[in-house]
Amino acid sequence: MSALDSITQALAALSITPSGTVEHASATSAAAWKEALQAASETPKEFELLKVLVFKPKTAKNATPVPVVVVARDETETSSSLLGKKLNLKDLRLANEDLLSEFLSLDKDSRTFSLSSSCFFVFVFVLV
Image (cartoon, rainbow, N blue to C red):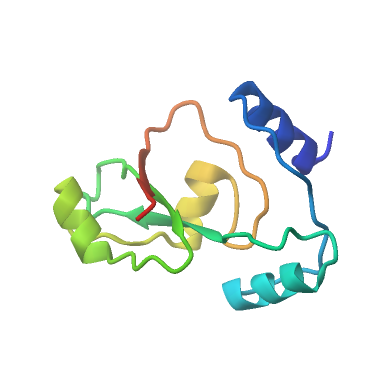
């Protein structure tokens, strides 16, 4: 089963049906991704990009960090200091490769991931 098939099945379980799929060249930035989508003929006329950010709050050396996952519109400003204040967490920083690998089994350019069953996460959805 491809990654796209597993995502489509997960969305279907939530009663969300994608209107279609678009295949495009690899993109290394949001701007390049948007250009690749606009160049593809099967892309809907109107679409919106989302970003997923993973933050690590400051924790004691012997404590397990609880990653904060933020899903937001691409153009939404996502200030780590404001998020930290709102969530009552100190010194939120973008997660490094080690944390991404440990908790999500991925790197920053991964397309799919799996959550470890022994981990806890804070999910934040920003759709302003």
